[in-house]
Amino acid sequence: MNIVKRELKSNLRSMILWSVAIILLMSIQMIKFESFAGNSNINEFMESLSQGVLSAIGMSNLNIATLEGFISTISPYLYLILGIHAVLLGSSIISKEERDRTVEYLFTLPISRRKVVWNKLISAIINLILLNFVTLAATLISSIRYEKNECFYKFIVLLFLAIFIVQLIFLSIGMLVASINKKYKKSGNISVSILMITFVISSLINMVDSVDILKYITPFKFFDANYILNEGKLELVFIVISLLIIGFGISGTFIFFSKRDLNV
Amino acid sequence: MGIIETNNLTKYYGKSLGIKDLCLEVEEGEIFGFIGPNGAGKSTTIRLLLSLIYPTSGQVKLFGKDIKKYGPEVRKDIGYLPSEIFYYDKMKVIDLLKYSESFYRKDCTKRMKELADIMELDLGRRIEDLSYGNKKKVGIVQGLLHEPELIILDEPTGGLDPLMQQKFFNLIREENEKGATIFFSSHILGEIQALCNRVAIIRDGSIIETADIKTLKENNYKKICIIGDNLKTEIFDIDGVTKLTKEDYGFRFFYKGDINPIIKAISDIKIRDINIEEPTLEEIFMHYYE
Image (cartoon, helix red, strand yellow):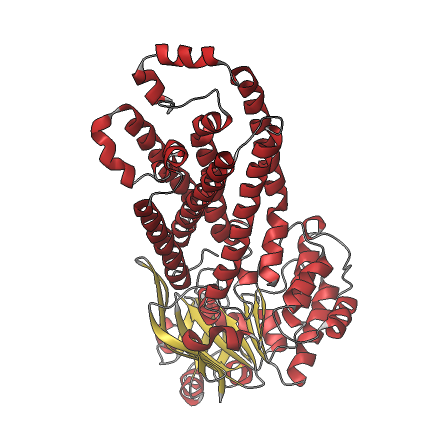
């Protein structure tokens, strides 16, 4: 538990910065929504745009005059931002001891690497949950003056659950990359690159129908907000794929990090 | 029982050699010197002992236990002082020491205070504000606060002023008298000579000699200087003569082995003077490096 506490403390500053950024972002988005809310003209305008344009920005089939519709349209950016946070956290939480050259301190104490990883994982997950809650709270508070029905709450809970799953996916990817790679700068770059590539793929899927099959490899497409809104659930197959990726990433982290030479 | 035992310990970094077939045996209660130049494999060996890196082949036993299996358990009884000290910059010294203590399941507060007093360490300061020498002091306190049975020191004196060095050496001697085994790696001969009972000399990843400091100094080598005119090199073509150098006044060389052949050879020629000395450890050491 001492390591968990220590990690939480050392991540506090970055946590606050991310939170502030997200609160700002959500407030600005909600100011934008103010002009759409209940405005039927906006829907007519949207319909007049070509489907191609709308698909590219991931806004087809959405009613952005409603709060849930609006949140749906901005959801890719929530996935992206919280995903970046998670992948960076994952890679840095493993490689930071090498970056700060504290390897010779921490790993010569009477604790196994496996236990260190466990503790770091717990602290990272607490960080993810906190940021998820901050985002959820920012969404709810900044939209406090709009009426919400039961459907909205169900949607928002499912959406943030989905976001949490995607956070876990990118956390485990970041950790895995850092546990395989000895060079901490490289692991950060590789982790973010993986995330960006999957994000680009997800945009590609929006635009080109024929590459729809790629949706199985980009977490950004696993839990489409549109689908959650219309169906009121998360797709089982993607839950399974997510759990497999998370399980693979985390068990890989334990195995590789315990076996490799540390960069002293 | 050996406190440290390594068996044909070999480490390659990719293709480049770290150490090869290293066999060490350090007994309980020894102050064991480990000497060699930079890049000889000293730090590699220590990192293998602490499982920071893993051997390509061979094995390590500490306190008779295989570290592959009992790593965390044996590290409970080890204190390690690395050559360069890095801690979490934002932490205060006292918080760092308490954090270290929390890994040992015992109350180390008293010993921590004692050590800090001896080393004149200010516990209230932040790590990032400390000078190199002061960080080293934190390292010393952190390495010793749990009263370890094995103390591993890697080039420990860098950054300490002579007075602190003396205090540190006294501390190490005291720990040794209380029963701790010391593994002292250094490239500074003076400190090894002053502190250690036994020494291993490492070069290019292999141990070239392990010996008692005394036998190394007294029994094996003589530094001989012969002064005379028209001396011929062939006279000194004897087994055991090394580093033969011709000077204006005669010859200088090191000799290892039975002294009689040398005496006999010299008795046949006319010399002006002869000088036979114990070489310093440094000279013995340089000899190994050529």
